Length: 262
Image (tube, rainbow, N blue to C red; front, side, top):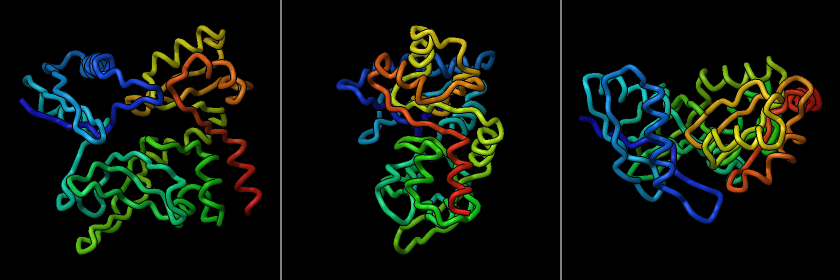
């Protein structure tokens, strides 16, 4: 049997965090993702203060599943175990927190150290190195606190316990695919995927999306059909998903932003 603490958190934008409900949804999701494998999951509890779920994994294929879940949901690390060039899963902190970049929660304990994604890296990787203000880039790409990403560790200052990073290729590929598709994407945080799906159906927008993809346990990306715009969909479904926060990835707006600063 193996014990694993996931990086993805239990959180809500409502008044009460329903741990029992979220734990059941998580276990059911993991069962679906590992269907056919000899493995059993047990929810142990939450690791505070970040409310990260702790699981036990048992069965003949527990080692394979253990590594699979680390790749899918991330986990926690000791500072001394982090290596340069390592690819790990992270979650954005509030992009408004500092002016010189964005801090990434990558589960480093007990120091609770975040990795810094410097502004020059953000610009070089997302907007062709153009000197566009960080907040404009973040809004254009739909960034929000808890946004799941994969990062590559680029620098470790062991003396001062500081880490720098850049977006890993897996996350860049995701952004590039979204841009290439040219479709509006409505991003959500704080509720499970089926809540978004239900809201789309209730409001009559069941046929207005291509897919609703889970990018984190409580984060989704709803790709809308050609001709459907994210602000209009949000105006309709927002009242039905009160415990969620939304943002938008709109390729046309990103193209306009890059053109303006070129």
